[in-house]
Length: 300
Image 1: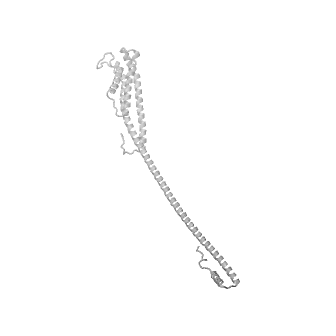
Image 2: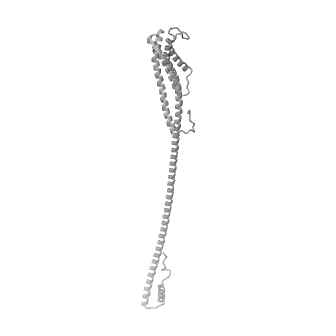
Image 3: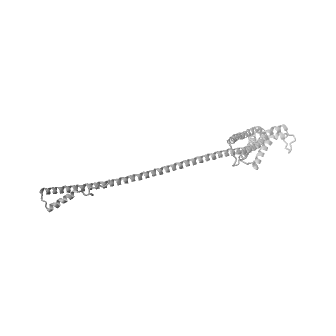
């Protein structure tokens, strides 16, 4: 699994398995690094004696000769470790000067360590004639193990980096799916909240409209009742006014009638039936009869 298609669905068990695989791959990578360092340190210690002896035999002072092997081994370890780390980061393959440095440091360390076994008589030949096979094998194991392990570790690191990237892609796809699902749920919850708020606002507006209509009806009813009350009061006032006018008119007529009756009575007592007196008597008699319209009261 080098990569995942955007349409590929990743399940939770696959994401958990990818995390466990990454942990195991990281452990393997640390094991390779530690093994390389331990082997390099052991090879440095093992080959230091032979390389120092080789340097002293070639007229290098002892207090300086011991530094030759650590320098060569340190250069070899550095280039091997750096190549391995860079191989973890992507498509890196050592070539050019890194390749030359790696093989020069490795071969120089191996040759200096095996020089006594290759040329025990001290005479250099392109093809050794009296080589010590046992010594050559003995002194070749540590340098070649270091070089071969370093080369193998570069391949291991490249493979571990590829597998780790693939598993991280799986985990990232799972996390993206979770994030998308969470975002979708959040949007849905937000939409539901917005719908609920809109419904509450609509209910509040409807309640306000109902209350406003109720207030308008109540105001209209109070206005009608007030108008009716004013009309009744005005009508009652007119009735009372008409009654009062009728009462006043009746009192005037009654007072005039009494005056006429007193005049008539005084004339009858005097018993002087003159023409003027008779006329006055007739008027008195005629005024005793009430007029039909004066005593009629207005309807309530």
